[in-house]
Image (cartoon, rainbow, N blue to C red; front, side, top):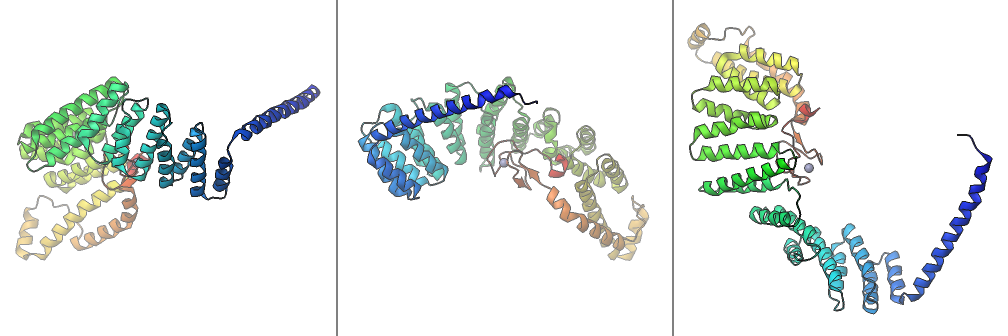
Length: 429
Ligand SMILES: [Zn+2]
């Protein structure tokens, strides 16, 4: 951009405006400071000298003298809370609440702040009390949201669900975690001794309704749906309904294909019980072709190996690894191969005649290496890649990055729901 001489006119104008603004500001400040009580400056001084307790005392003194300094208290309380100085924050807000002349709207505000102080300090029952008192006030919505958080952290699912219902009565916004609260309730009922199948069925029904409502709001609810199907399958399993169990598990392949890895082994087991293991295996292979995932790969590989021998299994593995090179996949293949070579080694060291017999009638005459050598090589190979695969063999939270060897519906790090993808780190790249 070229410099234009007439721009110079603007500079003095801007300076003049700034000068006027500063003077006005200073005048206003001076007139305000004259009206402020002495304790205020004392408090400010203490605060600047990092003596917050003395500062609080001084500011409480200000509040007694001047009822219009509540904003100062809220600011101070928030400052302490943000710095994690919970005792001080609580003291500031409590001193506000103790004032007899506090108008009702300010009282509600102070109670709301105090509730959050207690929540952050981990004093959940006192936080709960504070938020319960705010139900009929303008803080009703944030108070109910805080109550939901409290009940969730206490794993008190029935009360969390009640609180969600209260929230829904106040505002029309979807609460994605409701389906999971119901699932938690169902899971607890199914895990009880004896299992409470009726409560579980009712909770799973409510969870399905929650998912439908989420869908109407245009949200993706695949995770919750998969979880409902998994729990429904468990429920069917507990009452001995094999067909219902299998249909529930199978529904995941269509409705939430990403989550197939979580149920592949159970689904195959269910087919095995029905004496239809070949069909189950084919179903999983077809699913794997469309939605490759490590867990389905492992289940198919092991089943193929057991059902159709290692030649078929290796063909499958080779083809899969060629399509999607994966260290974890290779790790799984080596694990199966090692199991096999152990069996062979055991056979070799067994009765010589029996071994001869075994080799003669074996359906797998393709082994050309001596079993011991092969075993040692495989072990070496696996230990070489294992240190690396260990790091990849984890689930990770999309939100906070928390890594875990187990799959979680709620992140143990940030407590968000459905932030885990049912895929290992390596698969997410
Ligand atoms: Zn997280």
